[in-house]
Image (tube, rainbow, N blue to C red; front, side, top):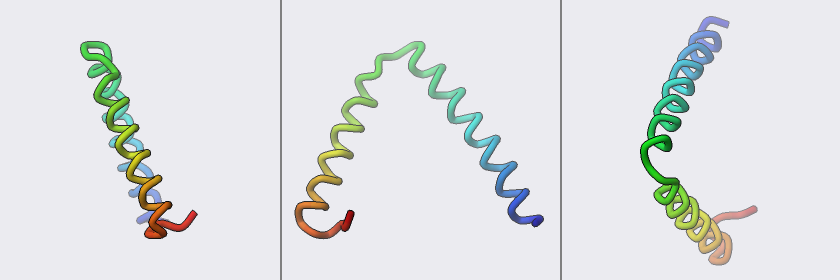
Length: 56
């Protein structure tokens, strides 16, 4: 159980830090970078699905 508990604690703190950073970032900047990131990622996933390199 030790490694699982350690991984859970580490994931909690990293997740908390990332959420805190994201909230600070979007309070001073726009969501535009995240919109572009999501659109590019979606396009890449669709392309991989259409070419058969990624299976659903």
